[in-house]
Image (cartoon, rainbow, N blue to C red; front, side):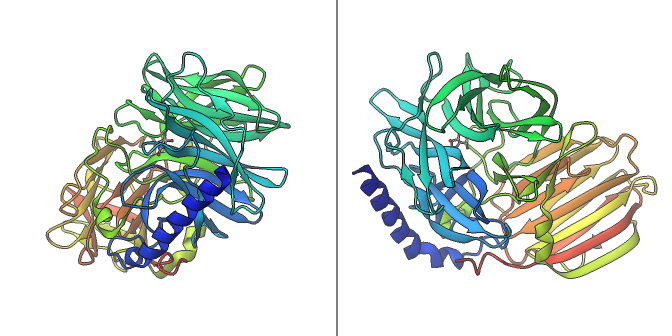
Length: 496
Ligand code: DQQ
């Protein structure tokens, strides 16, 4: 019976998608190379996995409007993480434990087991006493059609855990045992709880993997835990930690106690639009993350989700980034090398000395890539402003202040819609060079700097007249050792 309800709800969603997808395809704000839904609303990445020769993206999905609603899991596959083929939704609300209109199939993860693809997600319902969250299982033999386990839920909120703050399971396997980390809170301090299982069905509570003492917010959403080199990394998206929305911690993990000891912390992305990143392993061993390029109303600079709802959709993923462990055990997040396949019309300038006035970057438009290497020792200016998507009246401004060692993304004059300024400090100690790498798409700008350690994703809803990009040094000369530019191919318009 329940199988039938889920199938019917998926078919209903698919009818809606097919009726509206061409309108979204013709939209002015749709992205050229960032993954986005065919129609409707997208938020967190879920169940990212490489399974039977293809990358799978699942995502929080409401097919019926460009706003959040009872969540389904959208689904798409790709062989290169660039060109995506959309599939019917993998999960739809259908059961007493996941069918509330303010709930549904919340975030979770995927893992291959016995050749099947297993999904673990949070079912959210309401039994008359407020929202309740529990962890549930679904699986598939072909990676396309999923069925929910009839014994769901497999984990209910334990004693002392608030029933509406127990979510976002991320599963991995280590030596024949499955482990799962999920987010919760205790006395208004965020926590990551650890569970283990031998068969993905029967789970036992293990320990508090890590927790906030108040410095990392009151709730940890979408925790993710994985080995990297000889270390372990915990990522989570804290609620209530001000500008800190995507924290990473690096340390050591003890499988005997289930405890994580960290001594390094950092921010994955300081932009106004980056949240809930999830990681997965590529077949060549790279640890890759992707996040939702937007945010929630409780965030300090939040205004709204942007005007895309007018075109029948909302939300996209930030570019996939490879996570790299550096010698000092901090992390850098580098856009995957596959993206280089989308480059066209290359332009290169070497040893560029820019003085008074604006330098216009060549070969750029509504979707392009700009890379520069600034020689700080040969630079006399104290600041450089990058004016992006400019058209005489509007522009997004990214300021690098070498004296204050600060980077700042100001989009208040970018598009007549967006507000907000993002800031980050940049460690320039003993640095001869500052590297900057920018990806511009129709509705977003991602800036990577300082060896991909200071990154900002901000949505900017510029129009097609905003095609100029300028480099503007202040009070002195800027020495760019190498400036490279490319246009970027539109790969999503042809996506099924
Ligand atoms: N989004 C999901 C939750 C998660 C939140 C609901 C984070 O599972 O905690 O759509 O963005």
